[in-house]
Image 1 (tube, rainbow, N blue to C red):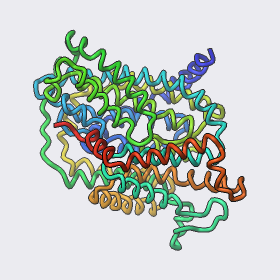
Image 2 (cartoon, one colour; image 1 turned 60 degrees about the vertical axis):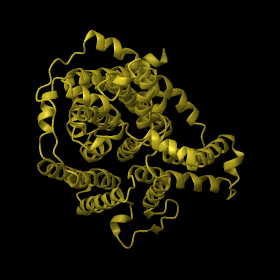
Image 3 (cartoon, one colour; image 1 turned 90 degrees about the vertical axis):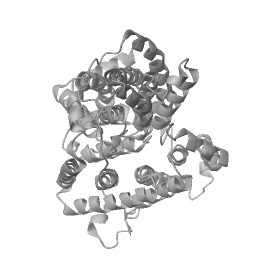
Image 4 (cartoon, helix red, strand yellow; image 1 turned 45 degrees about the vertical axis):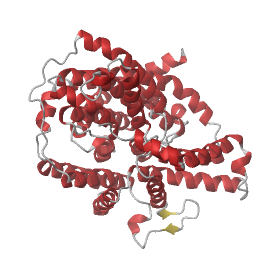
Length: 501
């Protein structure tokens, strides 16, 4: 009964005219930018983040959530139509989705992605509503030692689930933690790594780092790799799947929803792992294995459902523990903090309208995705023909204006340029910037709880081992680190995160 009352509060908040409007705007903007090849949800949310800072907190977070799953959907549209996935998790969709488009079945492929996204998003929202309150109550019992061990565990697991070199991912997290220490010491007020720059006394601006590292760096990378893009369909026809298609997609959608809901809470690349795992499961159990890679509709339904279910359940650790499961959730942490809200277990009691309104808005956003995007497929197709050289300068302009407007300080725009170049260099060196953002967001939390626990224990480090929950997380951290560096596990990671030919 309490759950129904809370959901009623959530829908009464989410259905306010301004919240529905900005959820619609978020879904539209997220899809419009996410449909551009190579950008993806992280860069989309990073570039559009500044426009939400003048809104009420609940409105801003609802809009950002809409941008996120709008960008997720946009990535699948690009993957199906032109075989250029907007992000890693959409790479699996491209395997069979683009083949369906080449065979003149782009409509059913896009409709399947939309249906799978809606079903999975709805089911995962229910999981979030049911699971979040008890987890928040458990998290209220955590002290500084438990939070330190939990954050450390999350960082190490994010390395285990990251693509590419384990050593490079660890180095990126360390660099992110280092950047997070810039500014005045949290207890003594002593300036650290400010190099005499007054603007750095308050620390590195989160928005400048995010927009530069993900927005500008991705644009530079895509401009370098610009190639002819051929849209395989000029007009999408016959959107609705046939009866046979509908019969074949039911089970993959349900299985993908279950996998995505479970794997979405994992730190790092849980949503990516969910998509690849779903595809592997569908291919293994299918009676039509020879069709996979050549236009099997199950290869679209399963991964898209898993991807979108994981996108919803990744909010669970954010809302209950204040810990981001992946870079987009790290951006959401920054949005919470900018609006003066500390994400974590207290949000559900201190800001119930915001908490339940955000959950209710996820269902509304999924409905808007279906109602909005299928009729606008033709517009996305035409948008994909715009040359990068024309489109991207406009994106950079709006991102710079948005960042400058936060503090009306030109230093923030210079910071975008610096972090954009740094991100581009890191990408050229084979380093993924995503772990850096996680380290930057979680680093201050790691330091604060470490020092607070040592102050309470009068400098005795054994406090991390004598408290049972903390000891368990430290043991899991060591186990995850050991398992990650084992040669057999490294080879398995490479296989999991490699596109099938």
